[in-house]
Length: 199
Image (cartoon, rainbow, N blue to C red):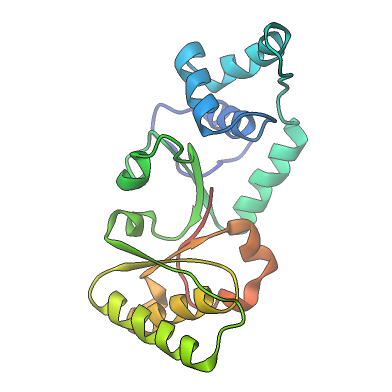
């Protein structure tokens, strides 16, 4: 398998793939993922233990199909994106403080933007002209003051907020988007931002 993106020096490609597979497995969320890693040491060992865990509890556990993860990794690579794991130095420090923080973030661009002061821009998809103007002005002003504008890839206020931030900083260095997957299917909102994130 080719590179799955940037990993810490001690994280092998096999373990990186296993981590992605573990997190994409049914009934495995961020908290269960961390508990499994703590108990079994690696994602590879955690995947091996899943079927036995299902026999001991009320819930059935099975690993996500390898082919599905291979398709995901290929799509991430084609999007020029990378995986960022919870124990890597570039993982956003404020996000890491949450118990439910995503153990793996898929991103494209400068991941260090999330370590700067952030402001989320959300709102109506079918916003009025006045709301759109105000959102663009807010985002531009916040960006000019050094804030990272956090936005989804939805049309409306989110897209306008990111565009407003991009007006102030070349290639929208101020933008931290949510959704590499939607980046591939919703390109009309992707002309400005430099960072796309999928958790």
